[in-house]
View 1 (cartoon, rainbow over the protein chains, first blue to last red):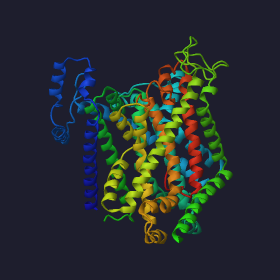
View 2 (cartoon, helix red, strand yellow):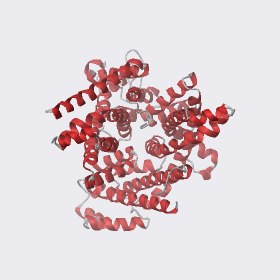
View 3 (cartoon, helix red, strand yellow):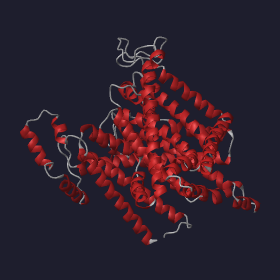
View 4 (tube, rainbow over the protein chains, first blue to last red):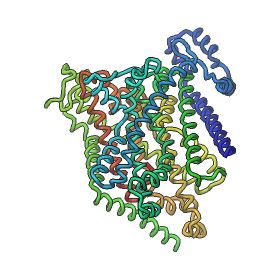
Length: 315
Length: 294
């Protein structure tokens, strides 16, 4: 088990190394260098020269790469090319709690809706309840998250004026303040996620309900609710856990877009602003952090799976 | 000669078989039919946009931010442009990007997958390491990063979105090749002297059509959503090309005064994606692959 975990962690680190390499060299493929973009072709030759020196762009790309990688391993992805040249770590450090709050709350909301919905529609297969769940699941899957965000703003912020339309409040400002700002964006992100999980729970649980052990349990005289909760549900959760990792991708992509609708300065907004400003160090830093988040979330899902399902062998 | 005969019957069997299955499911499934009708309406709107749109989509008038009325079905935006006409024109790019990017990633992805699976060895190793790497990331983040690298514009969006979806097709194709490679009919073709390329094209691919079509239907809806998201973020086809994401981004600052600017462009995106999801679900039923993808 320890060996398996170690191997998986090493594997994840290797993936991150490969990603860092790709991320670095792909941006260097772009014609023209970032200095031109920074000065918007208006700067003098001296200004150009000074900036090139300052950011080390005069060195061979391979040297730049190893310097960058060395700094990265020490936790320093560079400084922003834009505005007051903040350190990328500082920018990301300020953004991370916002994105994590958002993803966490979205996840929580989605699971709270999806689990009961999926279970009900599996048990009451082909009834009105099941059809309602499946219509909502289809709508949830098909709705662009940024559109849902806009609809929520129109209804709850612009018309009813119950909740703020933009911004973020840290937890230190009080739980309610924090929650109030996050509820609309979290619903916008969580809906698609919730639809996927509900459909997964339904189809997985349906498979279990048909199995022999369920008939045995029923024959022993266990009540329906007991057989479902104690026997079918734990088994039905296994495939759901495997898709959690994949569905996390939706949460993260959702956060990237929805943060921009609500003007929350999380990772997504940092990334998009970085791209629009051609601020490469910031873009690289944000992409790497998002990747790391995703790779390690998947790692945890895999490890969780091997703990939950004793049939999985750690070769 | 005999080899030629087997491959012909094999191929025609798979093709008609696949079509017959899809047809029978569509005939029985009401939502699939509904989806098909909605999609056809949008396709019609895209093809005949110049005749269908009541106004010039870019014509600015003094009739700014007027609510939906008989003159402007869906109202006008902040520059007095007719929202209905803009949405009709937007259909073109949104559908075009959705279908073309998936076509590109299907062809390239399936090629890579079949190639890797058929030859194995170091080719497989290199291709699959890359695919695994890409598999480890949210497709949308990959597309965003590719736009960051290549810049905005129609061609770049094609590249970004089709590259981002490649891994799905490669994986599906490879797994099918692996399951077929050792089958007697492939062995027979090889012994009979059929070239590798021909075996892949005529014997393996027809058998892989089901899962690939299913994957394509899933990917098209994601590609359309992806393009809309990119355009919405200002990383799309460009500010001079009408797309639904762009119309929504334009209207976003005014949604508190003009709700229609926030509602209708998104509704169009949702209807198209919903119709494709309905169709995709029916196709998945037809090939009995419900639980393999989502």
